[in-house]
Image 1 (cartoon, rainbow, N blue to C red):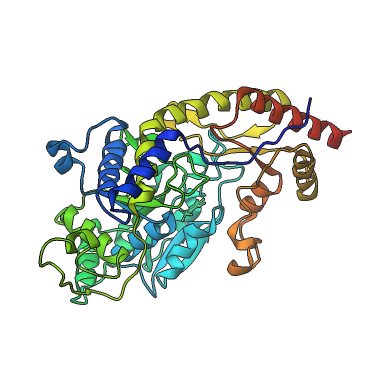
Image 2 (cartoon, rainbow, N blue to C red):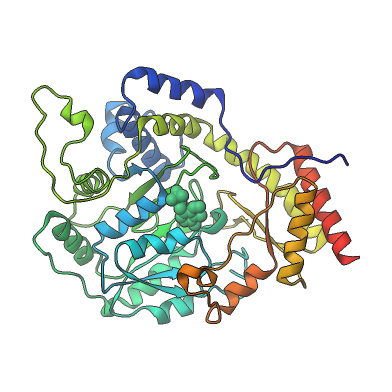
Length: 439
Ligand SMILES: Cc1ncc(COP(=O)(O)O)c(C=O)c1O
């Protein structure tokens, strides 16, 4: 076969996104404004219904789907604000799987909390093979200091939230909600912790926009399962706004969604009680600063990309599903383990294609990656476990299942700009690399 050039995960941007960005640029409003607000409503409608075609400009849908999504400039910011709204801070513990990207843990560290890593199940979940937390270890890790758990829907596969919620309910007795310190944020956090009354489930759904799972006996989309959720719209994700992300949350008894939404606005915009749009109203220049907070709002240029991506998103997911079947068939033929993205009770967003090659060492895995790169095929590794990284102590000895999962893992290129021929070429190069390696 002729040598190809297969990128790992370039963004799929059509003329629709380009036109919408140009319109945003010409509109005279380029920072957070009408496009960001519309994207928030449409994402809220999507995570509640699975539909991307609900007209959220209609007055009735504006009120119905407006409050429980806040668009921001990254998933990292979304997770950090989720934790800050929950009142997570110094002295608190946050449980994170050892097998994830740094942002799942660093957002908690930014808040001053201590991260407690939990190993994954040996070879991942028995059905999906996804590197999900060892739920017995999770249960054992919860103490009276634990304030949040960050499950990660790796590659788009939705974690077992029924199990996670049953664990936090079971450990309810240990939970000590914070008292209000009298500040607007401290008061809100205290009311949220009192109302939830247990460790909060703060999902890292950076990979899983559009994925769903039967939860409490009902099909639910990511964003409508955990207490708080963060999504990533980074350039390599299924759905992109170049950089970007969003927070969603479930309604909390006795706490108004609008109040939580307002707190996201304050935290993401310097604690300023009027955004740029509100200040344009005649005579409305004066504002207050409620807290010395952060700057991580989404711009209308980013939202313009997102609005048109959302129009195309169900089609993009379908294309991913078709390509995935091809990879599955080849891996099954070669005896290579891969994640199962669809089961009776779960549909992944088909974000990443992870394979594990039996019987090889880390060095041999790296050799295969190099051989594929020589043939023009970019691959990757999701992930080197966090405890192996310098920032987290470079010691994975307490997380043997994470190390084992990582040591023979390769992530194949997987995106919607791949043609059927490209997918065949990747499979051909994989077979060749394995053949040479075996020979
Ligand atoms: C699992 C996971 N969580 C969080 C993030 C952070 O996303 P962002 O770059 O939008 O902050 C990423 C990014 O790749 C990720 O893979």
